[in-house]
Image (cartoon, rainbow, N blue to C red; front, side, top):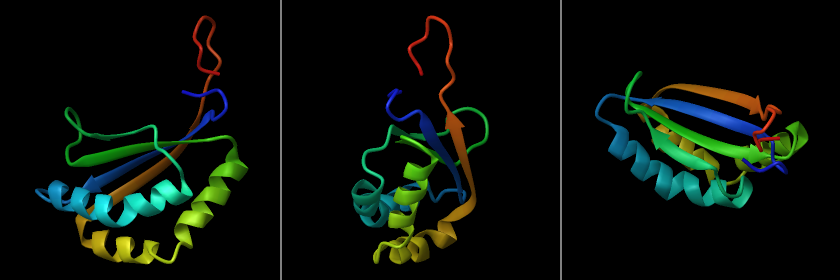
Length: 111
């Protein structure tokens, strides 16, 4: 984690059973170009292996809450973002969005 961007947007999408491949195709085709333009580069993408299944997780780093709000607004108001929302609506069962902050731990280069 970058000390310049200690705020992490931790998103968990629960995808309909047997629809992960379709969701990933829609996400990559419609959302990713917009997200790269508005949110910049993510920390990573993951799918669940153990625990709750059919989950897609993505992490984005921000400098501050103001940075998060500015870039989120740019994403949400992007002219193409509504197409992604419409195309993915039937594939997503639930969404969790968490903002977590780096914790200063002795001997650990996190914050």
